Structure formats: C-alpha cells, structure tokens
Image 1 (tube, protein in one colour):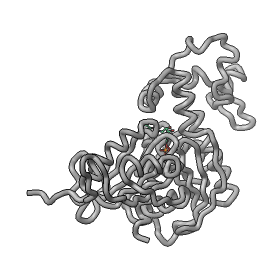
Image 2 (spheres, rainbow, N blue to C red):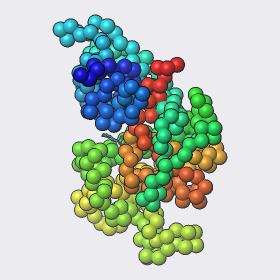
Image 3 (cartoon, rainbow, N blue to C red):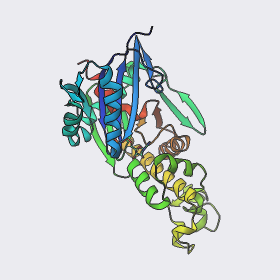
Image 4 (cartoon, helix red, strand yellow):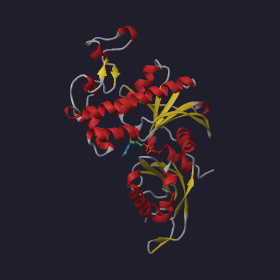
Length: 336
Ligand code: ADP
C-alpha cells in the first residue's frame, strides 16, 4: 500500500492576475505532480488559479492540501490556524478571506525578495533551468554558481519589474513598465472579444502582425531605409496601419490583432530590459513571469529585441519555472 500523502510547506504568490501555489507532497498523486519536479522523498508541486476566481483556489487548498496536512476539520470548521508563507499584493488583499474561510494565517514575504530568492534557488539547484531561445532554437545554459551575479531579472506578470540582482538577498528594483502581461490580456480581451489568455494565445498563433503594424516599407514605398539599417519589414509603428487603410476594428481578423499585440508587448519589454541592462553594464538578462508561458513566439520576439538593440552583446535567458518565481522564493524562505 502507498504511504499516506503528507503535504507540507505550502507557499502562495497572489498576483494581480494569477495565484501561484507551491507545496511539498511526500507522495504526490499524478494530478498534483503534473507540473512537479522531483525532490528527495517527495515532490514539489505547482498549481495556479486566476485571482478573479479565488474561490477555486480556496477549494483546491481545502480539499487537496489541508485535507492532507494534519489540520483538523470538524463539521466544516477549522480549529487550528495554519501559518503559511504568502507573497504578492494578494497576501495583503486576501489575508482576511484565507483566515476566515480556511483558518490560514499569512506569514507575509516581500514580493521582490521572493522573486529574487526564487530565481537564485532555481539557478543554483535545478539543472537545465535556464535556456536561450533564438531563431527556433532552444539551448540550455550552464550556470556557473561562482559567476552568477550580477544579472537583470525581468519579471513579466500583470506589470513588469526589472531587478538588478547582485547576490542572495542583494538586489534593487531599477525599473519596470506597466505595459505587461495584464496589458496584453486586458487589451486583447477588449479588441478580440477573447475570454481567456489561452484563447488569445491560440488566436495569436494564427495571426499576421503585418496586417496591423505599419512597417518601414509601408512608409518608404516597399524599400528598406538602409542608411540607418532598417529593413522594409521592420515595424515602424505598432498598430499603425489602421491610420491610413480606412478600416474599422471589425474589418481586421482577431488573429492578426492578437499577434500584433503580443509582438508589441514582447518587443517593448525586450527593448526596455536591454536599456536597463546597458545602464548597469549587465550582460545577462533572465526573463520570468507567467506572461511568457514558454511560448516560442514571445521568447523569440524578446530575444530578437535584446539581440538587436545590444548588437549581440546581451543575452535573453528564460526559466523553465518562469511563472512560479515568487511562490518558490516564499517557499524556500521556510528554511531560514
Ligand atoms: P501576477 O503575479 O501579476 O498575476 P503572473 O506572473 O502570474 O503575474 O503573470 C500574469 C500574466 O500571465 C497575465 O497578465 C497574463 O498575461 C499571463 N497569463 C498566463 N497564463 C494565464 C492564464 N491562464 N490566465 C490569465 N493570465 C495568464
């Protein structure tokens, strides 16, 4: 008979769009371990929920985690309070809800501290965590633990934070932009009537941004602006075509709108990231956050932006556990 599952060390990162959970299971069931990475005598398990559907997250914790964690329930009531590491804005916003509904008290961890802690933990302990992605090619990066710092962390969540990391617990938030994953999803919903992120991504797979974006060639009559190194296919103005082609939103395919939007957001973040790397002389840039979702087009666009603006000097790198950086950082803080 399998030993009983014991869940311990739950950590939450409650962001503007998604709630991320990391927890340790001594005997992860197949569902719990779908995204899990194996650790000694158990599994680190990962789950995510939309913040707007916080009740789904509460139910998941109630039935899949508290159920196995030794917290006693009687007639639906929770008798012991359970202290749980939590980070992100929702650790403040939803503290009362978790206490009231689940008997969980949040032990709050700072959001930036958790992000950095999560990335350092991954880079130091998980093999083949970081990789580059350019021209359709994914290459894992060997991380030299003695030569890890400094680096720039660009976390693309609802908004974007750019953090210069100099060591364990040594970091500074040097920049950011409000044009992030939330902008992609929010604008995308308005413009395409999509209902979800996955739907919007799926649409973007089939789109062509050149139908919406104004290209250098559109301005120069089809030729390059070679004097300053701009090819005719370079984007001169994202979403610029509707200015002159006399079309309404309904005349465009939602696929093309979604593609253009994804490209605009990814390109912009790649460029701002590079400018900040340049500002501080940083050669390595790690991109994380749930916006990336391992999507090839997104990673390719970001990589090309970094490569283009740095003339090949700086490298964009991505992380396999990109969406769980803050939650992992909060999780690892149990040790200290
Ligand atoms: P936050 O902590 O601000 O919620 P995340 O790192 O969780 O940030 O990233 C949230 C972003 O990830 C969303 O704004 C959206 O662009 C993207 N995203 C990826 N998967 C989903 C999903 N299933 N539902 C909603 N947004 C998603």
